[in-house]
Amino acid sequence: MTRMITQKRNGLLLVTALLLSGSAWSQTARERVLRELNQKEAIYGEAAKTIWNYAEVGYQEEKSSALLQDMLSKEGFKIQKGVAGIPTAFVASFGEGGPVLGILGEYDALPGLSQDAWPSRKVMTDGAAGHACGHHLFGVGSAAAAIAVKNWLVATKQKGTIKFFGTPAEEGGSGKVYMVRAGLFNGVDAVLHWHPADSNSASAGVSLANISAKFRFKGVAAHAAGAPDRGRSALDGVEAMDHMVNMMREHVPSDARIHYVITQGGKAPNVVPDFAEVYYYVRHPQRDVVQDMWQRIVKASEGAAMGTGTTVEHEIIGGVYELLPLESLAKVMYKNLKEVGGVNYDKSETDFAQKIQTTFNLPEGKEPDPADAAKILPYEYERTGMGSTDVGDVSWAVPTVGLRTATWVPGTAAHSWQAVAAGGTSIGRKGMMVAAKTIALTALDLFQNPKTLTEAQAELDEKRGKKFKYEALLGERPPALDYRK
Image (tube, rainbow, N blue to C red; front, side, top):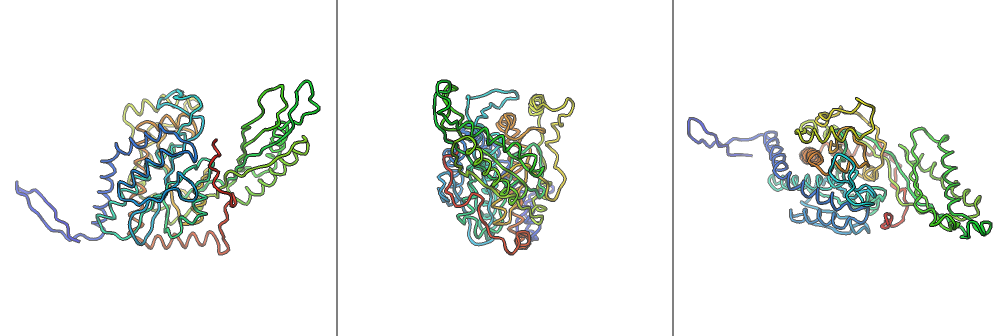
């Protein structure tokens, strides 16, 4: 391929035609992609801040989804709306033929975590949601990467297709599971994703499989003082179940996690509650262990109902696989993260970081250095993660690779008001752009090196095993569109 190079020498402009090797053109293209993302940082930052302000919870992300669809549509992507029976899910596609690469984008917030972009607790709206997992950045950063890759496809006339998957309700709603179940990832050669964090890493990480459900107990109402013998307390059923599950903790693997919240426990102390509800999560690095623990918890609920003279039913709300890491892809992502680099704070960002770190409840003197946001963590194979994600199901369906970037101040816990605060500042925006650049460069590498995609598919096939058949942990239920209501 020939490129015209303009040089200034001895006061004269010289135009030279150079025959560029593939690697030279590739390097120039990479620089163009990075330059484009740098030029659009303010635009993407504004879009992310808008979604941060929307703070819509799972399956209610109408405005957030519409913003991302509009952004991609204006760039020439074809939009499939309301896929997999989910009004806020969509797929945006550009290009033709293979390879076919997908990029995931999330945009749901967490309930009850409203917070201003301020380094001390400052609720914006009592009881409102907040982006405590940074999905406003996730969605926009991934869209930015998809647009940059699209422009590269056009400029280089590279054959291939880029798809952006708009995936709602990651936080407990398992949105991607329904999209996998609907076959939306069929024919995709690889999927790229990222997640906000307090550090930068691109190791081949793993996560916890998870099943969640709401247990609903029904009893008999009565006057708690005048006729307690005629009542049967649904709250007693919930508390008896919780007590049995808490005793069970001694007899489950040490790396298991069980959490619950009582979502309804009655209306008044002098009325025996005739209805109560408890919401459970069960997690472990292996989904077969999760399924075993799950059956024990179901039996505990049944025993609690028998012992309290109540009845119980449960509704599975979500269920996700553990992540299946592929080293063939992770090493490509890590290489590109190293090239892009981490997040460098200016003085005002450093001041913000130092102030918010005083709220972390860490041992005195143990706060991480804010400058750690600029570092890239060393590569690890199967680095353990203690969260759960519906990206896990995607990773068992198609070769998948991800990274984390420092959108939060070092030391920040996810699902905290501190994460909301940092995510609404330039700190969050800078971390988002690190992710967008890394994903875009990784996509370029995969488009130009289909051999890597072949290796990744072979690695996936080997890890899944010949007998693998995908079956969603949440069964055949329709999307739980009302799980946050």
